[in-house]
Image 1: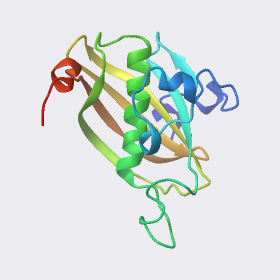
Image 2: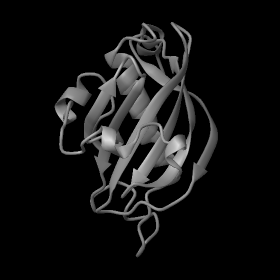
Image 3: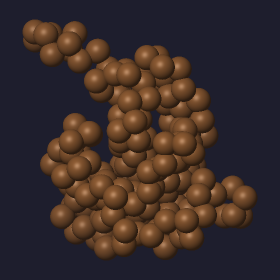
Image 4: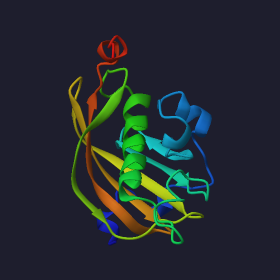
Length: 170
């Protein structure tokens, strides 16, 4: 990918310099167990609206056994979930939407350009593009393995009405 298209140049962050580990991510993001798709945050800049983190993909991921047997490939939707969690982390950490929880609002221009397999480190970079406080945030994201793009696109996050949902009866 030409450097002019990168959200952030690889030289601007250090994957060994963790600014938020899994416990710090858990204080902000609600996902747990199989749905946790971030291992660490290595760059978080509110002024630039950019956040970078990674997911260390293990052989124990919930999708390995069935996607694809004998040749496990990280599903594209899981890559997008990792990007959504990155965007949510950045937005919630800096209270950009002024909401308790953020959910998927949509995705645009998503492209898959490579594979992710157990043993890979999936690096996710996200950049805020548009913000309407209390209503919506739009970010672009790029996912890499060994500095090669494997997934990119745009994602929208919207406030989730936590009070209304938690009072729901089934």
